[in-house]
Length: 363
Ligand SMILES: O=c1[nH]cnc2c1ncn2[C@H]1C[C@H](O)[C@@H](CO)O1
Ligand SMILES: [Zn+2]
Image (tube, helix red, strand yellow):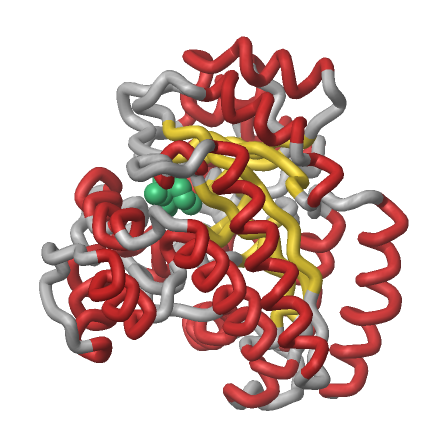
């Protein structure tokens, strides 16, 4: 799978990248968490030192379970309860992604987590959109380029999916490109939210579903066949429907075949999967198998703060573990761009005018 170009960190950083699965509340700069905590009087951070805080998030998220991994978000959400905080966090996320060589990103968050003080759901969305616009302007002013879109999540353990789906549709012309459900997967099947998914489909709206991370094939099956998900958040446990015989012959079960035949994008987040215990180690991650079988694989960060990663570091780690070369990384990137919740013309333009020339310039 590898080609001839040696993959230095700088080449990987410069390579145009597309990020479909990145949580806004999982990507704050540690220094920003500390400063915002001071500003809003939040006293429960484990430490106020940014470097230590960054290490703490990473270590606490290395928990082996999704539920424990998710506990760390209490700290980031606690400091994101004001308009100013949301604008700042959103603008910095855009700057950080652009600096990482991300050409197009879909950032997601759950508005319902930011209404503990006095913000309404609509005010949360407006603040984050203002932050994305500000961040994009700063990137352009500094000579860079990036395009971002928003995905609104509903939390599986709450019962607000319909409300959030309506919110997503209400703000679709202001940059909200889609919807997702996130949070604990085991015990909260996606079919609990059928009304929301029906509403979205009736409104020609895009949605992905976190599925096949902390729960296996039934969750993926429901997400696709009951709910109509266009993409799978993680989806990595589709590998449980693939068997390899003693002679190396690979057999796909009906669900795995369906996912591959329909080119359903898998938003794979390698480091996050190791931290939540979804896979035992990076080298044992099914991404190698899934890429070899030509599933529609995309590479993502999930939570840059908790996972201590960037798109560049995920690409580097995968290149090291699986021998992926620039051709493979370009393939992941084009897969992601094809799968974006963006109109067809815009996807095509980014592939032809940014991604392909960007990779050609590296070789
Ligand atoms: O990998 C994940 N699986 C399920 N839920 C997640 C994951 N990463 C972050 N979340 C949750 C925690 C955030 O507060 C929420 C919205 O971004 O989504
Ligand atoms: Zn996620």
